[in-house]
Image (cartoon, rainbow, N blue to C red; front, side):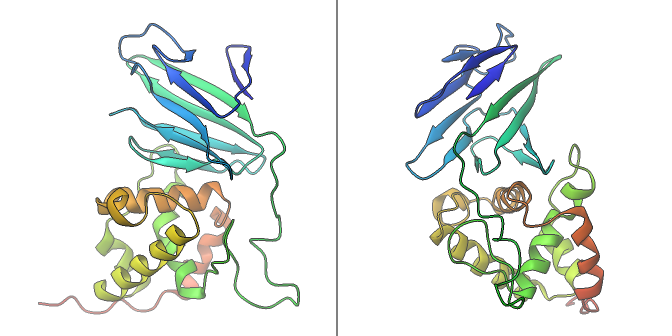
Amino acid sequence: MVEFCGEEHRVLDRLTVGRCAELEIDENPYLHRVVFEFVHDDERWWLRNVGSRLVLRVRSEPDGSTAVVAPGSALALVAPRFTVRFAAGPSTYEVEGVVELLERDHDLRGPSADGSGPRTLEWGSIELNPEQRLLVLALCEPLLLDPDEGRVPAQRAVARRLGWTFTKYHRKLDNLCLKLARAGVQGLHGDLAEFATERRQRLAAHAITCGWVTVADLAELDAGAVAAPPEAG
C-alpha cells in the first residue's frame, strides 16, 4: 500500500509514480513523467528509479536506516514501512508505503544458533566473513554518518581506510558482488554493474536498508583495519 497526500493506493504488482504516471504526483515540469515504480517479482517488492536525474532517498522503519537510490538503480523493499523522499526543482515530495505481509527473519544479522559464526545477509545463503563485513562498513561509513549528504568513498580511499592494497580491495569487492548477484541482488554484476561508482552505491544502499550495518558498528573499522600499505611508485 502506498500513500501520498492522504490518498492510499493499493498496489497489486506494479505502480508507476511521476508527473504523468499511475500515481500522479504533481504538474511540476521539473518532475519526470515517471520518476520511479514499485514492482513485485514473485519474491519481493522493488523500488526502481527509472528517471534520468532525480535521486531518491528511502527511509526504512522501524530501524530508521536510509538508502540512496540513484537513477537507473533499484532497491529491494525489505522493511515493513518506508518513506521515499525526492526533490524536483523547488519542490520536495514524500511518498509513504507499507509492505504488507512482509516476512523477515530477524536472526539473519545475528550469529548462528550456537552463538558463533559470521553474520549473514538479508536473504540467500551468503555469509559475510570478517573482511567482507569491514569492506561493507568502509563503503557505508559516509552514508551512515550523514544520510542526507554522504556519498560512497572512492575506491582507493576505501582501500586506504582498510589498510589493503588496491588489488586486494578490488578482488574482495568483485567476489562479494558476484555472491550477492547469485543471491538475487540486482545491479552488482554484469551489464547492470558497468559503472564502478554505481555498483558501490547500490551495494552500500542495499546494506544500509537491510540493516546489515549501523552507525554503532563503525567502531569495528578502527579495530579491524590494518596499517595502510605504502603507495606504489
